Figure 1 (cartoon, rainbow, N blue to C red):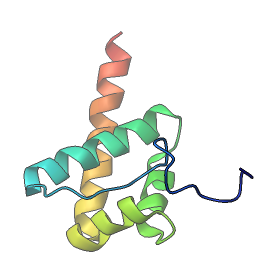
Figure 2 (spheres, rainbow, N blue to C red):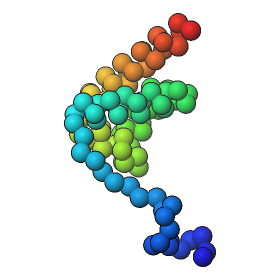
Figure 3 (cartoon, rainbow, N blue to C red):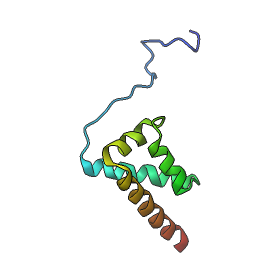
Length: 89
């Protein structure tokens, strides 16, 4: 089978599903996302750009639901916490 044709019988085909989540689950997921990008070396402003950009569906969906102010506070809080933890070691 050529690489560019999908095989309906392929058990390794990537399939995405949505799961119901509470507001607390969503907030914790957002914390994990922000921390992951900060650990990769992104600046807080670069992380904010990911949330603002519709090209990044998950982060932008959180941005649309929670709003600019919530995302800015989240990035600032996670960045301060992460910096405090890394400076101690």
